[in-house]
Length: 225
Image (cartoon, rainbow, N blue to C red; front, side, top):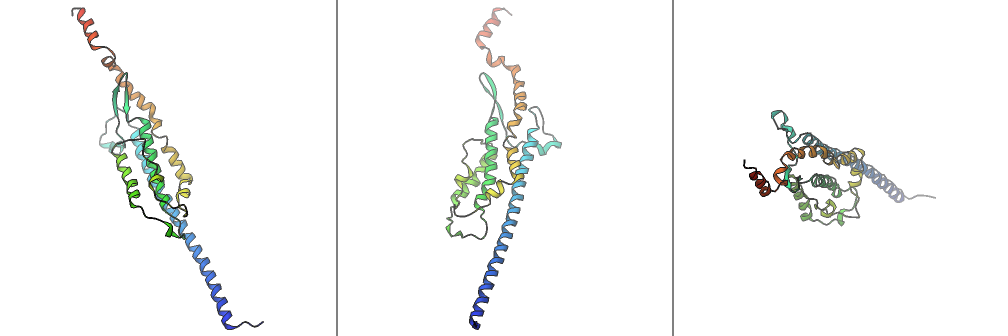
């Protein structure tokens, strides 16, 4: 069977196109891998910096003073000992602070919902700048001590496409990232003993709020001091 020159050229073009598509697939896979490595590095760095700050400030007791040698131990959150009869409590509570840290961690991981793998049709995406600004506004509120346990989950703010694959699962399931997330999820709660010891220092003043002032004063005056 004879093959015409035109058919040979067309076959050659199809072969070249197939090879080009294959090479393009390898290139996309390479860049997706590079992007994943960069995202993992950034995420680990962010979580590790948060861990170091919290761990350093958690080592400070109630009576500790910040001197020139311990400036790097500036606490991340500020809490107060408040009289709430019949005892002294901390506000915000450890649970509120821990919940805020958990939300911050989820915000960091939630960024990857909007980072999509290369080589996909992005025409299905719909821009929503307002939702992105809401996510950005959540972090300053937490850093100013406005601790709340009602901060919406990151996925509620992010406009994502169910038709596109993103890096969230690949990053969040990384062993090192998962280890840091697990540590941060309990880091503040683990300081409960230190907080209890600090609050016990106020127990020596408990008569000031437990005893009835009028009754105590009357009994004292009855002794004719």
